[in-house]
Image (cartoon, rainbow, N blue to C red):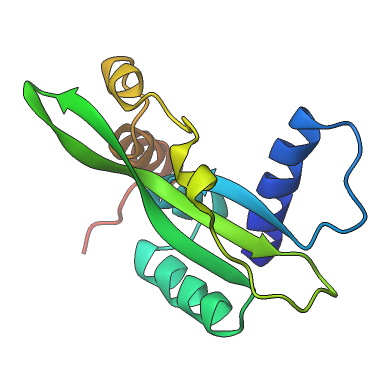
Length: 139
């Protein structure tokens, strides 16, 4: 999981800059945890257990990213995903999230919900595909 988060952060950074700075000690990635668990094939509880272990080792720091939105007629501030600061290998400094990381428009929550691009729909489609591949056996 550390490698997946590191790869996501590096891919994002490389889209913004052609070369990585030599002094780079961490990368920041935005991830929807439900989507990450589906992509890695892990149950959500296992995902959180591994994330807690990575955080305790000082490899990642995470925090919810919230966005104002109107979903199903209700206006509010919703958790739209998680921000991860991921320490690069062979670096000593603990990763941290800055205020500018929270100000970045990582996701259009209203637009994603309108198009059906939600963690719930991803999880449901994955469950449906798994059911088609291996339907449950009768007892």
